[in-house]
Each structure stands twice: as C-alpha cells, then as structure tokens.
Length: 410
Ligand SMILES: Cc1ncc(C[n+]2csc(CCOP(=O)(O)OP(=O)(O)O)c2C)c(N)n1
Image (cartoon, rainbow, N blue to C red; front, side, top):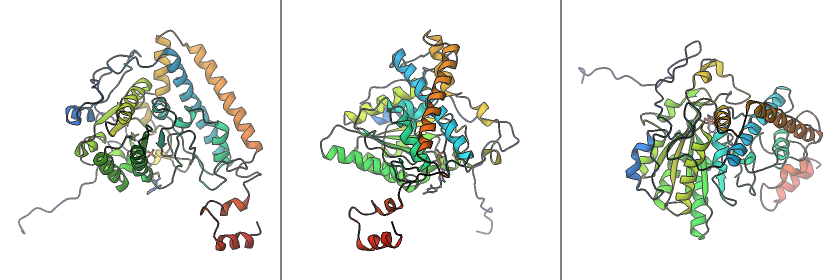
C-alpha cells in the first residue's frame, strides 16, 4: 500500500479565464447539412452518433442545406425572425428597467433567442412546456401579450402572478407555459409526469421539459430520464447548453460524458444535438422530436448547443469569470444575424427592411412598456393588494391564515 502513488483530485476547468483569448477549439462543429435525418421511428441504437454531432441547416454562406432544411416557408421564417427580434428588444428594455430600479430583477436571452422561439412553432395548441426562466421566446412566439409579461416583471396591479413571484417567473396555462419555479430542474420530472398523464388519459397532447446545462447535474434530471424511458412518455426533453451555469463552465456538469445529449444513451432515449443558433435547424429537430412523441414513439433528448452572451442575470457580472470578448469567439454566431442573412440571400429581406423592423419593434415594445408602467412598477404604485398574499396558499383559506390576514388589517 505504501508504494501506491498519492491520489489526485480532478476539477474540470474552462479553457480560458478573464484576460485570456477565447478558445472554443474543444467544441467539435459538424458542417451544415452533414448530419443524417433518420425516420422518426428509428431505433435509438441506430442513431447513437447523433448524440455527438451537431445538426445544422444554415451554412457559412447563409444557405440552407442538407436533409433538415426546407421545412419552413419564407413567411414562417420571416415571422421567426420577428419573434427573435421582439424577444431581444424586450430584453433590452427590461434590462434597462432593472438598472433604473423599476424592477428588482431580470434575466436576458441574448444569443439563445432561436431555441425557444423556433421550438414553440413545432408544438400545437394544448401541448405543455415546462420551461426554465430562459425560455420567454415560447410566450412571445405563441402571441402571449408582452403587456402581461411586463406587468409580471413590475409586480404591478395587473401582474397575473399578483406580485407573489420573482420577475420573469411567468405562468400561462392557455399558452402551454407551466408556472416557472425558482428551484432548478424540478420542472423536468414534472414534464414527464404530465406527459404520462396525457397518455394515461388517452389524450393527444404532449409535453416538453426544459433544463440548462448546469441544472442537468440535479437529481430531478436523472429521475426524469428514468421515468421517461421506462414508461415511454410522450415528452421532448430539452437541454439548453449555453456553456455556462452562472460562473460555472459546462464541463463541470457534463463531467466525463462527451456531450449532454450522450446522457440519453444510457437510458435508451434517442438523443440529438442541434445548433441552437440556427433557427431552421432548431425548428426541424423540434418537429422531429415532437412527432415522435405525438406518434407514441416515446421521449427524445435534445441538446441545443448555444452560448449565453449576456450576464446570467442582472445580479451577475460575467467579466469576473470569463473573457469579456468570449461571445465574439463563439463559433456558431448570432441567431438573429444568421436568419437575417439567410432571408436576405433568399431575396425576401434586406438590410433596410431589417433596420426598419428593428425600429418598429422597439417602438412597439416601448409603447407596451409605457402602458405597463401606468399600472405600477417596483417603486411606484399601484401594487397588488396585500390581501392577495393569503390567497391560493390552499384551495380554501384555513382559519389561521384568515386570522393572519385580519391581523394585517387587509
Ligand atoms: C436547486 C437550485 N440550486 C441552485 C439554484 C441557484 N441557481 C439559479 S440559476 C443557476 C444556474 C443554472 O445554470 P443552467 O442550468 O446552466 O441554466 P442557465 O442559467 O445557464 O440558463 C443556479 C445555480 C437554484 N435556483 N435552485
């Protein structure tokens, strides 16, 4: 025993730190059009390699190529561009509103707009998403009113959550957007349960679970995969790999598995990786996975390879843990720019129209913001009634809560 070498403890570390040169040489990027598109009823073991490649449609010249291309019309792509631009403008205004003290907190989507916006277009009315706090594109792309989102962020008198939730923790049953919870990963297993219930009832609605790269380390992620694979639940299990979990780089949560998608292999769940900054690719892969679920072929795990360009939240300063210019080095580019260039190439869009749309969208967002602010912000009234604090804790208010409410004089 005494002759054995001393053991050493391994802590994965990112390639660079602040002050260094961005380095994404470890991200193996497939060429656009390169990855095969299997039939939806493919046996999982036949597509093991898909868990290590990246499905891409838009190539370096902005052309749509390969077997996953061509599913969307020009009109649909233009609509997709508009959704992403709206989300970006919304983010910019709400980020600023937080800095002005009009709300306590905000979380941006910068760089990840394609993921939730394109995914939503693959679902049908009645399907249910179980999102994290970074999928507001699901709401924007489904036509949920921006006014309701802002009212929630301001916790004002029209806040649909009545001021009980942290900003960005939206909820809309009607728009297939399950109430966001602050506790990471809990929604992933709930998505599977919802999908199981749909199957038990003989319904045709499917569920989509959402999780970030960091949160896959939570036990609920693993529980979700066990239940989804055992019961072949009609669910799409989405992992948004934006490279970061606050200050922790994705290699920590990924550990020894080559990719996050590869986590599905041990559970017998078909697993695909897709370029998360490629709107048509995200949509095509989402459609594939949604169809599998709808045809009762079971769950699919999808890893969206993207990059969190913004800070984690308004409480975070990324320059403390990664190079300031790291997002410029991200090899998959910017989702808005890439779709814009593709549409210009198709002859249905132009630089001028893009500039004009940007201005239009921004003034629309500002108009909604002005209206929301007439109903109150963090530091100006009106607010939801303090009475509301006691509602909804139980279906019927128990006597002790009624007493507390009386003591509070509301
Ligand atoms: C159970 C739990 N642990 C820790 C936190 C604190 N926390 C909030 S966001 C976050 C990082 C999540 O990163 P990731 O899953 O990669 O998603 P991203 O924010 O990058 O979209 C952490 C640790 C929490 N909200 N819940």
